[in-house]
Image 1 (cartoon, rainbow, N blue to C red):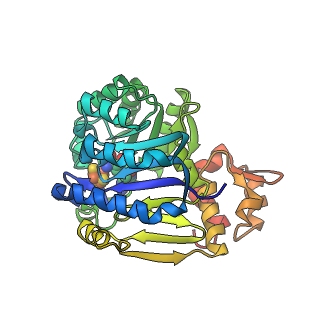
Image 2: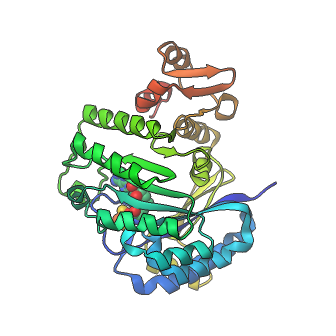
Image 3: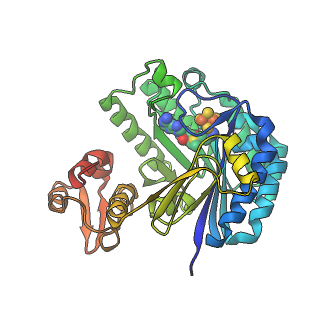
Length: 366
Ligand SMILES: C[S@@+](CC[C@H](N)C(=O)[O-])C[C@H]1O[C@@H](n2cnc3c(N)ncnc32)[C@H](O)[C@@H]1O
Ligand code: SF4
């Protein structure tokens, strides 16, 4: 069967910009939401010929929930005829923007999986990140989502936040587990250039402290029955994010909206930021402003190594092609960091804790 099976839709509106955030975001532009929805519909129409039945859809942001249920329902109504049977429809939700009624409406509109941006349950750490939601709002949003019928709820957390002690981490772990999420994404704080944290001169956590925190998170979640299926992602059996698995498996995907990236048939394109320019271009019947980059076989081989080794199950060597330094494979296997079984290659548990160092051994540019 042909056609792209995975769709990402970027919904960029936010109430304010969090200190660590470097995503394509529009603050103070809520008046543009209806025009933006029209433009998304137009872009979907332009690209529809590329799509097969969609197995996964991901509504990400920004703060998708600021679109409010009636606009999101309109968007999902337009996508419904394109969904494959049993499709996963994920949506990011910021806790302070949803209540029981909104979550029931979103579930009824066809959202099957909710990803709640919690980041931490400690008020002082949320303050350090400039987050708007309180820990109680995060808990309430989670419980309302369960009551609304969501059986696939993920929470996003961050470690390495300035001021975070080992006791804070233990408390976040306990609070996360107390909610009983189906999936957890737990990222190390990245101080991204251009973010408010970078401008304030905030420093990342010391490498050893970061490694200790990461190990503790993996151990704590595994002990509670979550599989460490990807570098920063953990799931109860059967609750892995199918959309993210498609990215890590280097499948083709289409992205709609400002800043969205698409990769189809060896070409990658990236829509420019700027809601005003995006809506104007689509209202005029044209494509959005975007840049195109062909990917050659070498780019794709390298990308497969970067992505495939993130997965616990690893990847097929025949599919990935050789690493830049094939001789390192035996060396890493002998050191107990990598496992080779006929044509399959995966990092061992110890290898996964030092994934970046391993990529430096295998790949020229990593
Ligand atoms: C697309 S983002 C934002 C989703 C949603 N707007 C929110 O704020 O919850 C998805 C997740 O990436 C993570 N993230 C974003 N920027 C990060 C950074 N600089 N370092 C670590 N994690 C980050 C956060 O956990 C966030 O919830
Ligand atoms: S982290 Fe989320 S809520 Fe905060 S500015 Fe970025 S996209 Fe918006």
